Length: 167
Image (cartoon, rainbow, N blue to C red; front, side, top):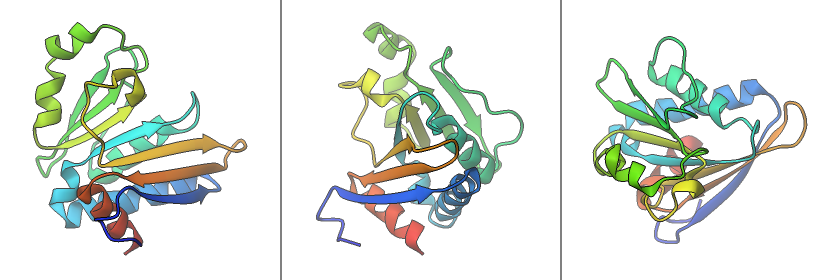
């Protein structure tokens, strides 16, 4: 793996089944649990409708300790979650985001400036407002189950997260 001073770092992976998505999400949750600074990441999720962005988020949140149903925040724009460790998690879906005033009115700037894990689907809809992501995950559906996944670390924290995923 290249050094963090050579950013961005890009990797491609294949998830032949949903079990591979679950395994990747579980490894990421483990890395965040053993290295708490990694849990303060901003992860941007890219992909077409039905690519598996929300499925990945559900697996990650369950692996981090979120209990109960995890719904897509398509209409609410953001769903907050908490886990027993006290980690604040915010799952954004900017698919229907259209009004820039909503950014200020909803306090999104404060959420992104604060600690905790931020996961954003359709981040390009909030371009110019959200900070640079630590890690971008682009999920492409190749067939009913197979996914090609491109990971791009854009910050030192993102590079640390990628490195931890190799451990």
